[in-house]
Amino acid sequence: MADNLSDTLKKLKITAVDRTEDSLEGCLDCLLQALAQNNMETSEKIQGSGILQLFASLLIPQSSCTAKVANVIAEVAKNEFMRIPCVDAGLISPLVQLLNSKDQEVLLQTGRALGNICYDSHEGRSAVDQAGGAQIVIDHLRSLCSITDPANEKLLTVFCGMLMNYSNENDSLQAQLINMGVIPTLVKLLGIHCQNAALTEMCLVAFGNLAELESSKEQFASTNIAEELVKLFKKQIEHDKREMIFEVLAPLAENDAIKLQLVEAGLVECLLEIVQQKVDSDKEDDIAELKTASDLMVLLLLGDESMQKLFEGGKGNVFQRVLSWIPSNNHQLQLAGALAIANFARNDGNCIHMVDNGIVEKLMDLLDRHVEDGNVTVQHAALSALRNLAIPVVNKAKMLSAGVTEAVLKFLKSEMPPVQFKLLGTLRMLIDAQAEAAEQLGKNVKLVERLVEWCEAKDHAGVMGESNRLLSALIRHSKSKIDLRGIIVSVPDHCDKAKIAKKM
Image (spheres, rainbow, N blue to C red):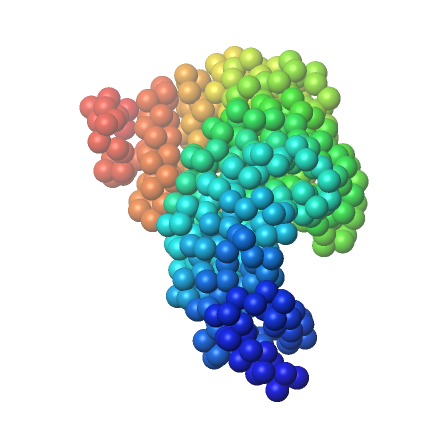
């Protein structure tokens, strides 16, 4: 085999100069056969022979061997050590020129060659960029987008892969593709070719790369990406395929317009179904999918319009299902349920409705389950929800009489700054303009001691600031004296020290 390969390489040097098509084709067939049997070893021999430099002159549109030359380049460029030599041999410019060919096989092998040269190669990407290859490929995707025969779909898949390798983890090249209008084209591709698994997968990977860029969100929002992704999601039964779609949905759902589009496309119903299916499973994949689905649900509720649409006056199916997560025995669902309530509690109307309908008691029950060695993230989420619910004036007295203060104070011993921060914020909201409650709270020695301690928590600015705010609020609202002996220095500069001094 080694002797045959050496002979072939020698013969190829001669035929490359003579341009004898039959002999050239025979040599290329031998090379492709050798590459198929041992790609790395054959590639090393090709590099050592100096034949790469001759390939540039063989990449001509008129030749019947052009597709095979491009195929050989595609095969050798599978090896990392061959990519820079391909660039140095001057192959990029003639390959990019071949992208203007009308021959489908030439286009296919050229796309493969360029894609492989670009894979994880700064030099390859830079050379393709300078030669203007990306724009030609995007133009092809646009013009071929609607043709659904298998050969065309294979070519579309290769072109998508080439763009992915060209721009992967490179913000400037991704931004370039976005400016060239690649996103609407890829979304259209996904819609038309959703039955083609390979092409669909390539589109999803491309979306995942592009969606990380903030500049892409506006373009995505102007397409029907939400509808297409949800439609595709509903068809998937395999965990791996759904995971790929989740990886696209998560960055896209950071955009408020897309949040609403996803809600309107029915994503929430899909997520709730996954939660229902996976909640009792102890399989690793199912636990991961439950977390992803519930996290995404919470993310969708961060948008004002999407949140209000799902709240439906507190009577919506989605809101009711989320409520049922709070008493669950599953920590992930408890967390997601509490975070969802915190997100629903972003306007007074919602807060008042939820307090009137018993949500406070559910949250206090949840906190009770996490007092001793509890889950910190659940504690933090439940306290966040209570803090938000306490903002409307009409809710304060109701929450105080429900025993929220006592429930929250159980976490005074927490050493976790996120929990401390939310605890302090909840108490401050509860006593705002509630003089009697403030007076009672001011008599709590353990609380005052903790406030003094936290006022000096320089490593945690949020806790320090919230402690100072609560302390000044206690003094401001309290009618009787609070023994603060010497801790006036802890009160922030913006507080009215004369007023405080009078109360001491």
